Image 1 (tube, rainbow, N blue to C red):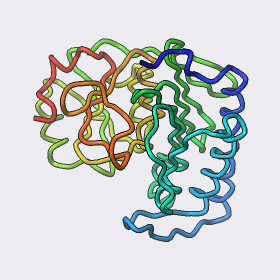
Image 2: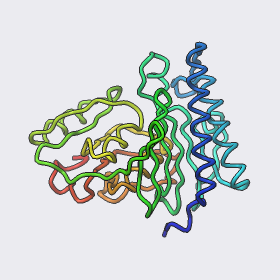
Image 3: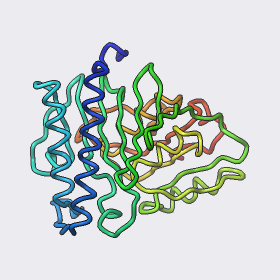
Image 4: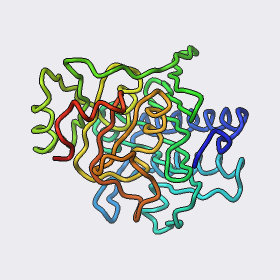
Length: 268
């Protein structure tokens, strides 16, 4: 079972934070210069920003842990898929590539560490603002912006919950589930920022019915769990990582872990 002994030391984490900012700065430079997308095998777009940001993060991990198992979105797309291991890193170098290409700012850089199936360390960067969310098992979560570090804590489920949903993947099942929550309001957002909103205590739940990849969720899920929340899989247990193909099924992210009993059945 994972515990804080599996976490990198503070100086290593500081180096990873620096690499996150370097990746974010590169993404913004390439955006300003103009980027051209091409389609991957699954018809999703990829740009030089995705690939070069992933190279920065992979290099930073290798500098700290030369033998690390690293699962990167673009490496997987290129056919370099490692076997799942008890301890491995997940990189999503540009979560929200379509938003990035279309001029919206709902994209992030994600780096997460998984131990024994659980996300134990996460970094989520919003390149347009430089805002960084971090979370570590047993140590809590924080948001760092403009040199100021703010500790994060989820909130108990209120009578009128705020549900954060994907603006790009708001399917009929999500709509129906959200409409079944009495008094709920909906917040539309992109990328892994949805988890971070819950970790900050400004939202309460994130229902997701459609498939995602583990690199889409691991980093922000670690932040959420460190802030007091939890992400549940379709069977009601904590979402696990290292699944076949590194693919997620439906999940429900919650600020209050026990709140599922007071919400509509999920996935129904």
